[in-house]
Amino acid sequence: MKAIYIAEPGGPEVLEVREVDAPVPGHGEVLIDVVAAGLNRADVQQRRGFYPPPPGASEIPGLEVSGRIAGFGPGVTKAFSVGDKVVALLAGGGYAEKVAVPAEQVLRIPDGVDLVTAASLPEVAATVYSNLIMTAQLQAGETVLIHGATGGIGTMAIQMAKAFGAKVATTAGSDEKVGTAKAFLGADIAINYKEEEFPDSLRRQNGGKGADVILDVVGAKYLGKNVDALADYGRLVVIGLQGGVKGELDLGQLLRKRAAVVATALRPRPVEEKGAIMNAVRESVWPLITDGRIRPLVAKTFPLDQASAAHEYFDSGDHVGKILLVM
Image (cartoon, rainbow, N blue to C red; front, top):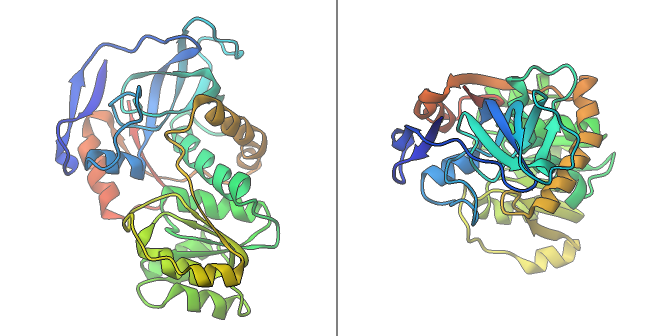
């Protein structure tokens, strides 16, 4: 089969197509003929040498795919049949024509979504739901601040938070993206972080109140500002480190607000936890996609052998929604 490997840490040019043996599903795993794979920030960080796969995971990048069930390893108890159209959450291996994955991390695609578009869903849906709803326990009527409005996480998080009844504020790096976040994605407040300080702007547009929940993909660079932007009893959930790993935390400010800072990662979690998250996504998120309250957004698709071009486009930051590799 064809698969994408990282020849050495670096830019998009280090991605290369190789012919390799197809994986053999182990105990409790299903084999999927991949139709499309989603690009994620984690893939870029892995390409740059900053985010190696967890122990035992494939060195092939790719954390989510859509496709058809092609076979089973021993001990699979989940009710799938060969040919079923599915999506899967992976620890790695998605940039390939076939992938083996624990059955707990596989779901049938939502009604009304085509098989290519479905590849845009599993990683972002699992990440956003597990952090906004399961970890931060976002409630209807609360204000949530989501950084990175037009990326894969941002576009899903804005729509999901709105569907659960929250007031949504978001940040973006241009007036065009600010407009997209409000007019197309439904954000109540959208802030151009290059033009104004987002904690002040949020309070000004939110009746003097900060955010009850912040979903942050930036990390250290935003730590101080995020704590400043929290409301009393607010919850900051850090899920990305684009802006560095070490920052200064004002514990006094955190204490005065009775607030919390939590950091989570989905990729290294054990299969049992990922399975529980995927079950929750099927029960709580898939119906929102089926009835149209959440729309999967695909910015652009690329053939597998153009993975370098796909990463160049991802690195440009010009996309709104997900970028997919199509087999």
